[in-house]
Length: 167
Image (cartoon, rainbow, N blue to C red; front, side, top):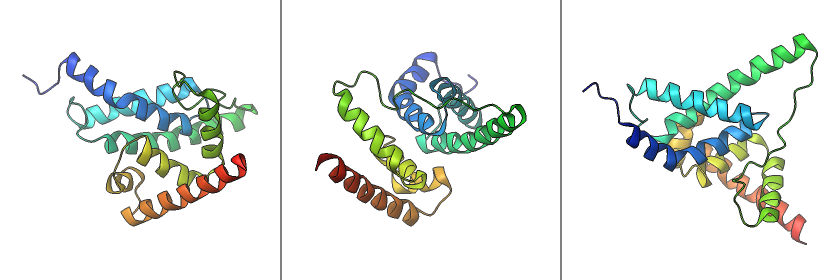
């Protein structure tokens, strides 16, 4: 046996983690298709680093997504400058389209979009990515205390935005 996992094991791992990865990728990419491509590339890279096995921790995939998103954005910006083209912004919802309360999802997305990216990515990784502050720190290459502070400030920002919307 070469250490690789079966298709069933991969499917189970993807079923458990793919939505989390896609949510994070949607925030980094400019379209749904780009987010899916970014996620797929990050999973493949993380699997290769893990010797063909499922990555041992989701933080590895989030870190790869974060890195690849930065590289991807730089490439896209250079291309846009060369072509003098305005890239299309993502119009799709970050959240699963199966959400029953679409209005609530729209309000949450709007509030999340208003948060500075440094807070938004930590809140996303903590709440939807289900990562610990140590895992977030590894994924974003920041100290764990910084991740915790950004999470706290992000939640404070969301509370403030919620008060504005609902009062």
